[in-house]
Length: 140
Image 1 (cartoon, rainbow, N blue to C red):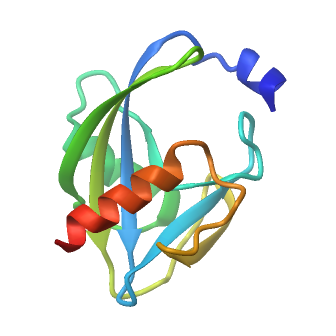
Image 2 (cartoon, one colour; image 1 turned 90 degrees about the vertical axis):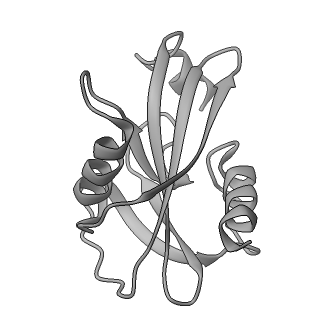
Image 3 (cartoon, rainbow, N blue to C red; image 1 turned 180 degrees about the horizontal axis):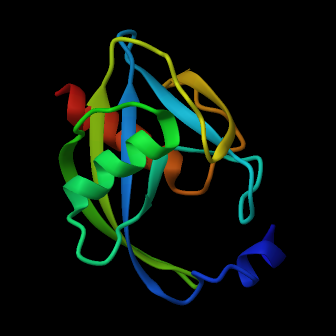
């Protein structure tokens, strides 16, 4: 996996990113399994890069539709900056609650609904903390 990060074309760049927490009626969180490197076969939330001249709100709706087939407008709740040795990302965080689970994957190998207190072990770093923090903030 470390070799994959070293070859990532986004490594060493500042990237504006949207990430969207999708909850169902049971308050479970939707996670998607990556099909490509880096972090191939790891679970992640819906998300992606913000395009040039695209607002974070429009990017969140676009990514949600592209990755899951869900046509909805997520609600903004937080922005943080994540900096480590490999990445510098500005993360615009959104959430959406849906009452159905008809997911149509386009970029991932599978999806699953997880209880926020029982997330999988093989999850992209920092995602677990994000989900836990966000679920507490959203539910309060």
